[in-house]
Image 1 (tube, rainbow, N blue to C red):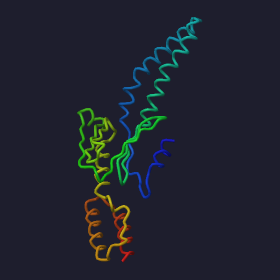
Image 2 (cartoon, rainbow, N blue to C red; image 1 turned 90 degrees about the vertical axis):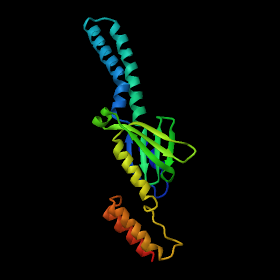
Image 3 (cartoon, rainbow, N blue to C red; image 1 turned 30 degrees about the vertical axis):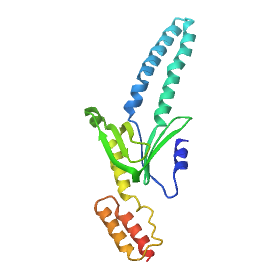
Length: 207
């Protein structure tokens, strides 16, 4: 369902580059108390059942409370996604009611990443996106693999405008310069050899 919702938001020729969520530490810290309560209540129910105590029936009902809270926390964590496309960065949250915040790559001025010692050990950190839009800056807290996220976003920004090559209305003299720019991206490792050859062929076909 979450996947279909995301796909429905994508524009024409827009594609997903990277998807991630908050680190599993975030989920674990949210459900730790509920896990402990569930274990204690289950142990109490087992003990009460062994002594044929009527309290066992009450215990069965009480177990549903932390289990329900745990299910809610898992759904909230699972439905909070951070996505990089070839055009923008999207943050989606909410299980039933959805909240979507996106930043156009064109308006991204800078990206800041901060990792604590444990963040470097367990691979999580904060990403702050500084934009020129009216929405202001976006802060993604404790996401998994922040270095990969930052790299994917910066590469997508640099490739912006080359994924969907459009040369209508341009003279053929523009084509060599565009191919040269594509070649520079290839040399930097931002475009793969296959992507470069595909875009080059598209441009040459327009001449």
